[in-house]
Structures are given as C-alpha cells and as structure tokens.
Amino acid sequence: MTKISLIYRWIIMKKILISFIGNNDCLLREGKEGAIISILKERNFDILYLLYNDNRYLQYASDILIYCKKHFPNLTVRYLEAEAFNPIDYNIVYPSMVAAVNNILNEEGTKDVEYTISLTSGTPTMHSCWILIVLGGIIQAKLIQTSKEAGIQEVNFSLDDFPQIVTDKQLKIELTKKDRENKLLRKSLTTKYPELIGEDESIIKVKLQIDHLINYNIPIFIYGESGTGKEVVAQILHYYGPHKEAPLVAVNCGAINENLFESEFFGHKKGSFTGAISDHEGYFSQANGGTLFLDEIADLPSHMQVKLLRALETGVIQPIGSKPKKINIRIITASNKDLDKLVYEGKFREDLYYRINQAKIELLPLRQRGSDIILLARYFLEKYSELNGIVKKLSPIAEKKLLQYHYPGNVRELQNIIKFAYINSDSNLINSKDIIFPSINNYKNRIEIPPEGVDLEHEIIPSYYQAALTISKGNASEAARLLGLKPHTFRARLKSIENGKYIYRTK
View 1: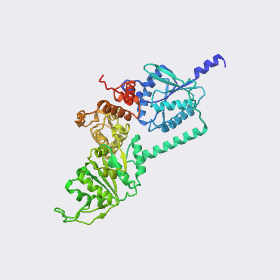
View 2: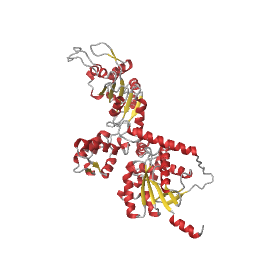
View 3: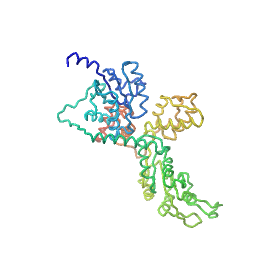
View 4: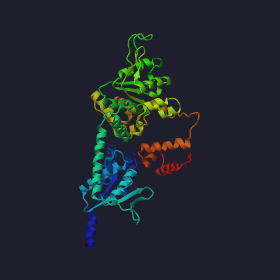
C-alpha cells in the first residue's frame, strides 16, 4: 500500500466512541460537563454510542445529545440499551455488555472503523467488563480513561506477565445463554406480583423470597420501617398462595387493649363476662383455614406474648366461656422494630421470636431504592389521573426533586406527596414547586444521644460511609458525592475504616 493510500485510508476511517452514561455525566443541567463531554472536547469522533443500563439515564442521554448538536454538529449520537438491573453483578453486566457490543458491530461493521471505549463512566464492574471484552477479542478497540489531573490516557496491558484471555465457541454460547436467562428472569420478576412496585435489587430479592416461601405453611416475619409495604407483602403471600380463597385477617398489635386481649384474639361466649352481650369470634377463628397477619408484633406486652405463644405452639385456642378449639392458620408477623435487639434487651420473648421468625423478609427504606422512587411516583400519578379524569405527568425537575428527598415515611409518604402534587398543579405538567414535603421533617436534625453515649469514630461515621455505598450500589464516586467528599478522599478514608485505623477529623 502506497503512502498516499495509507493517508487516504486514515482520512476516511470512521471513528466511534462507546461509553456508558455514568453518574458524573448526569449533571449537564447544573453546568458540569462530565467525562463524556471532556473526551469529546479533546478528541474527534464521528459517532458516539451512549450505553444505558436503566431508563432513568435516558433524560441525561437527551441532555448530552442536545449539547453535542450545539457544540459538535458533525457528531452522530446514538443511544443503546445494555440492560443490567444490578450494575455491580458481573453475571448480569457482562452478558448485557457483550450483547450491546455485538449490536454495534452488526450496525457499524469493522472495516475502516476505529473503536474507542471510555472506562471512566459507569460502575467499576462495567470498567472491568470492558477490559474483558476487549482483551477477549470480542471487539478491537482502544481503551481510554480521563481525569482532571491527567486528562485522557490510553490504557494498555504491555507487561509480559499480564494474563491472556482466551475465548472459544463454547464460551460465546454460554454467554448468550446467560444473557437470555437474565433477561427472562428480570422480565418475569419485574412483572410478577405487580402490587410490589420496583426494580431495585432489594425488591427483586423480596420477590424471589416470596417465590420460595409462598407455598410453605411456615411463620414469616417481615421487617421494615413504617410505610415500606409490609402489609402489601403479607397480602401477596396470602392471595398468591394455596389458601388464597380463605380469609386474611390483619391485626395491628399496637392497638389491642390489654384487658381484652383474650377476647379479641380467641373470642368469647355470650355472658362469659360483664359486657359480653353476644358471642364473639376472635381473630384466630376468623382466620381459620387462612392467614393471620399480626402487624407491629413487637408492641405486644410480655404477658400477651405468653398467651400468643401458647396458641401458636399447640394450634389450640380457648374462647372465654367455651371449650378449646383446634385452629389451622398461617402466621405472618411484621414490625418496624429490630426483634433481635429487643430479644437481647429482654423486651421480647426469645421463644416467641423463634416461633414467628422461621423465615424473614426485609424491606429496605425507600431512600435506599434509587430510581424506584420515580417508578412509584409515576404509578401513583397514573392512579390519580385515572380517578380524576385528567392526565398529569412529572417534569424532569420534579422527578429530580423527588429523588433528593429522604422519605422518613417511605412509600406511604411518597403516595401522599404525589397526591397533593396532583392537586396543587395548575397544569398537566407537575413541576418542582408542586412537590411539597411535610413540614414535620424540618425537625429531622433533632438528634437524640442515649445516656450511654455513642462511638462516633468506630460506629456512627463508618455507618454513614457504608450507607452511602449501599445507596450508590457500590459506586465510590457517587458515594463520595453523597457525603460531600472528593472521590479520592472517600476511598482513602474508607480504606482506613476497613483497616481499623480511621481517626475522625473535623477539618
């Protein structure tokens, strides 16, 4: 090939950049450009493929598209889904990314095309998978990363002892199979039990637990803050189970009068005590053949716990003034209090704890469920639109405001917020001003310190670091942002905490 032809071939070479949309690319509206825009300012490309693993990133992809039309008019921007509901699970992320890469290769080909992949945006799991994909030979591409300190750097693996990745036909078959299975599993779990709305990893886990437990008549304990949906889970366990045509009786244990406990739970005969003017069928008898759901079980006083335990162990109740009666019920309990702690403190009977807690389902607070906040908000908004005959939608700014709130009342509180936003809005588009949070939460900074004190250095501060990692699904940069720290500072302190050498400093 002549020198002229080489130059000509270089000129017509189509240059393509592939990148996930990371959290640092979602701040264009705030005037922060992020990694993708930084790369486009330094290097020229003909096509930009924006990969997203969740639909909530589409609004940010649109922002990038609008920016590029203005500043890079010759650049073509394309969106591509790389579905991964858990962005830190290699078994889910890798097959999804392989499928996305193959879609790009089928569309663009390999002749006269130069591919570049950015490692900066996305989760660390995605970064690792890009390396596996390139070194495994699935795509021939340059790997680059960018930072404020060093700018754009090409990533290479020139060490002689760097391990080589060998692929074969069987590996590709297994990856295709795994990708198909993951998509089918995700689809089945997100559409199953539609009463339990959400696509967060924690909700998928709850649905899997329900699948495993629903047909077994064992006591189940549901733990979660008030408003997280404990009764919804109890209803699913009953109405999707083998005894769905039998009664489901829900009881708030915190509202039971101590003097009427036996009458309320076990029933009584007419005339058995003063005021018993007729026969009364207790909760156990009402639920016979079905399910008895005891909400806020931790609020039962100790002497009530003894009587409840006896009935659960024997399967026999004795209504006041009547003969013993055999009952057959499924017990589901729930509480917003930590039963393990209460047992340790002697405030809840250990024998009753083991009797009701043979399987445990935990519901995370809404503030830890990420984009589920928007899914739930849209669901409630659709309900109110149908009820009132006027369709209203949330603006992107309103959705952003909803994501920034901490929801001490969880799903129940969100439902009320959306209801009032629907009423407050004077147009079909609900804006930020229509979202009003309860004023009671203005008192959230009233912190109570127990008499024994707190261990700020070894307990409180580390717990906030772990909470930030949980909310950000392991993304250290996003966790650092939540805590108002630089990413390198966050990583250094987290490492110190893990090594037991962290010392708290106010500055």
